[in-house]
Amino acid sequence: MRSFRGVPRGSLLGFGVAEDLAISDVARVFGLRTSAIRYYEQIGILPPAMRKNGQRRYDNTVLFRLAVVQRAREAGFTLEEIRELFFGFPPGTRPPKRWHKLSQRKIAELRDRMKRLKLMETLLKRVENCRCDALDECGDKILRKDQDKTLAFSSAAAEFKQKMFPRRGGKLKN
Image (cartoon, rainbow, N blue to C red):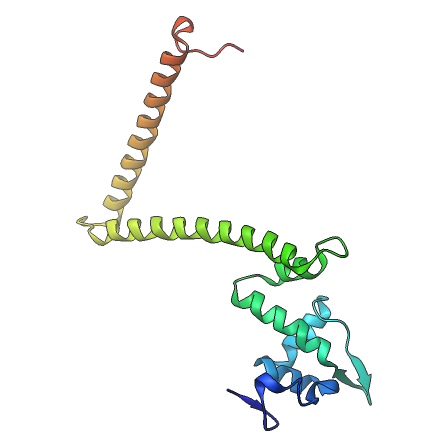
């Protein structure tokens, strides 16, 4: 467990350390750079800091907000999605509803990404077994395969139309 000024990380709030924190203190608690804290303020994820002798000072609410930001980042949310988590719902919308909506969308996105990754893996395995003598030969084979797939799809589509609309010769009526 990391410590902050000799206080274990998990007990910062219990020791009253979180009442008047400098930007460097806040950044250290979350392992961030001070520029990240300033950026979060700039884009509205964090509220503007109080100023004391010209320096940013934070209370414990910024720690709570950053804990949510950090968890959302760990879960793969973008900063824009995190802004939506805080500000993209009608006032009074409870956190479970916010998390649920954004999580469902993120899960669907991850599933799509996993499909693309699986396809990439399949393609990499295919090119790994390449036996061509030149890259132009590879390109020729790729184009021929893609053309064959397009023709096969066109034939299947024509057969489908013919079965569905036999009296019109497979043509759709406008």
